[in-house]
Length: 174
Image (cartoon, rainbow, N blue to C red; front, side):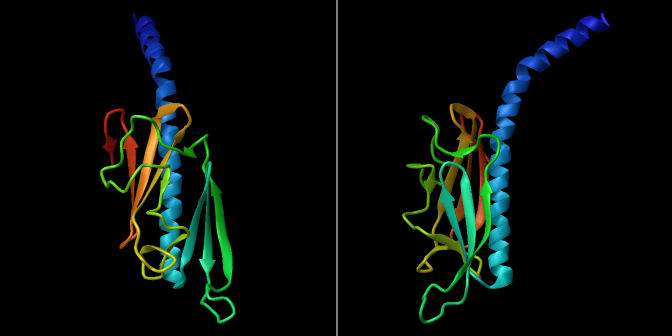
């Protein structure tokens, strides 16, 4: 009897495991990017320097610290702080049939920056374009052809608050 119960439980676990692994991959990619963004927001504030964020498809994000402007170079010299590649096959991408997040900053592309490029965290703690205008952003992530891995980050421009969402098949869950 015990062996039969263990066999049934083992069979169920084997069937459920691949979908759980896919969901976990998507969530880990979103958490990686969220931690990266939050860390660089805090660096911008603590160092009192603007930190530019650049997203490069399919799965790279880079931070660059901008120095105080000087007359020959109005943007000032810059220093690359960190380049990160998302792991587990996670890429910037949208999925057909998956709508915008509840924040509704847009989902016309995998990376929606309100038309701004470059974008940065400011020393005052906001997320802006190069002119200092706060921008709201959405970044969509997932593993190609696996909608169960769909995740998203939103950034609220005025406070640079980073929020993460996971697609459960019918709605976004924060």
